[in-house]
Amino acid sequence: KNQVEQSPQSLIILEGKNCTLQCNYTVSPFSNLRWYKQDTGRGPVSLTIMTFSENTKSNGRYTATLDADTKQSSLHITASQLSDSASYICVVSVGRVSGTYKYIFGTGTRLKVLA
Amino acid sequence: GAVVSQHPSWVICKSGTSVKIECRSLDFQATTMFWYRQFPKQSLMLMATSNEGSKATYEQGVEKDKFLINHASLTLSTLTVTSAHPEDSSFYICSARTSGGHEQYFGPGTRLTVT
Image (cartoon, rainbow over all chains, first blue to last red; front, side):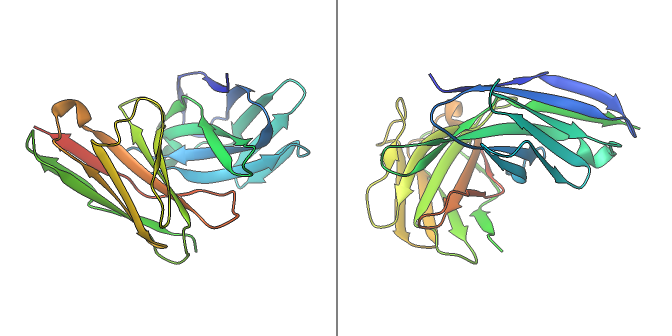
């Protein structure tokens, strides 16, 4: 069964601190992995996308890593800001026989940054 | 580019009535649109996939007669929740994808409250 699990479920950190969110997946066939940020009451916004051959991808203060052997990914947030408070969703894209792709969503990590 | 809008952003309706939610791709042609539902503190759950000009494909457990999807043009898909009940109260998010594309672009979501 295709699954994407994230940890921790929720996290509280102080402004300026760093944090790392984890994503483990059991998906086949793997196409790519994305990290999204979802503000409360809004749709998800893409942060990074990585294919099988990519180990790391950065977007400003966000750095994602991918270990395709262990099927793990992480999202590291550097020097957190209050505006980083949101849910972060790991999404793995699965290839289909038809040639299309399906997104498998993780359960998300709710991050709260305190002043 | 790749902007997806939803209308309305929030709606309150009485139990037993129907409500229509629109999803528009503003600056690209979306051959495929996806409808998701998200309950509080949970991740997105795919309800159905719609391709322009053809019938939508519903995920297991989603009632096609209750959630009517129309994708009549390359820029517009609608989701109609018929005979809404309080348990249908949720956050509904659409996404759109171009022909042959892998990326899904998400709308901002519609908050439905059924009283």
